[in-house]
Length: 358
Image 1 (cartoon, rainbow, N blue to C red):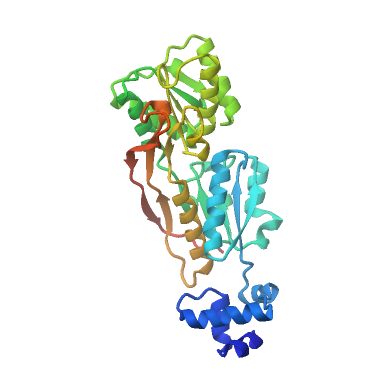
Image 2 (cartoon, rainbow, N blue to C red):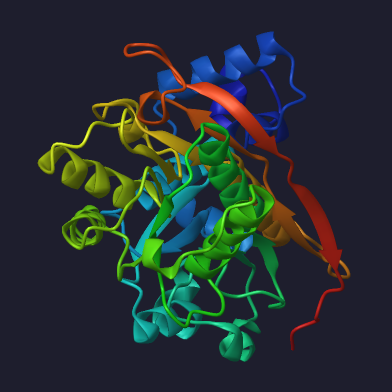
């Protein structure tokens, strides 16, 4: 660093500021320092920096399953947001296993990174004590509320209600739901089913248990199996709300296999607005829950906790904006046209008093 400072004609502190991304540096000075770095082949000694700052420069993102498009795209967005701030992301896949999710919170690898963004599926409200940890953490999703941590969730009930009302506004009266989890009290399935029932009630449509399709893991295969089972059983329906896009794409496959026109005879909408929704045939209408906002907010909250000094700030619960993107599968656009935003649900932020750990 001393050599770089001599070559560029600046102080060592200025070189340090450039290397660490300090924003308030004159462009000409920054260019001289970067040119000197390139000429001399200087590289930051990360081991020395980590010893000095007591930070690794790494954060962990723990998600259930990267084979699901939503989590793959969420991971991509988290990596991009962290990279823009100069941080690297370590990905852990928990496979929705209680043992592996517990390991994420207390395992031997925790010291390798400076903080954790965690989307639990196996852990729930009875496991709140496990989230009292001595490192920065941000929780994603709908399985765990009221934990001593920042939390970024979705507007599940309102968004599912809006999706159901959207189908009803198209004149659909037998709206099926695919992806329910019988007996679930918390989680995405329970909240989105609640929104579905609220949408039916507001539209003046009766709730019919025959129209609710149970599914285990939310995969394309389970969506296809559930849709096929309902069709083979002779369930009368003219619309389908699938609780995620993987289920919806599977349901679309089953509808094609049964030679049912979409959206002519059955309208279809999913949830998550993954990239595949733009390329199915027909293109898939979906709820956009604000995935990119979720990723950027989670990284922002975590890095703020990592860099915080003094008394802890109140924990924050953030609900991003969500919207419905209407495409061909609900007849909102003609074939070949891009999706049309047809409804918006506003998010918000709440503050919760922090719990001081240990």
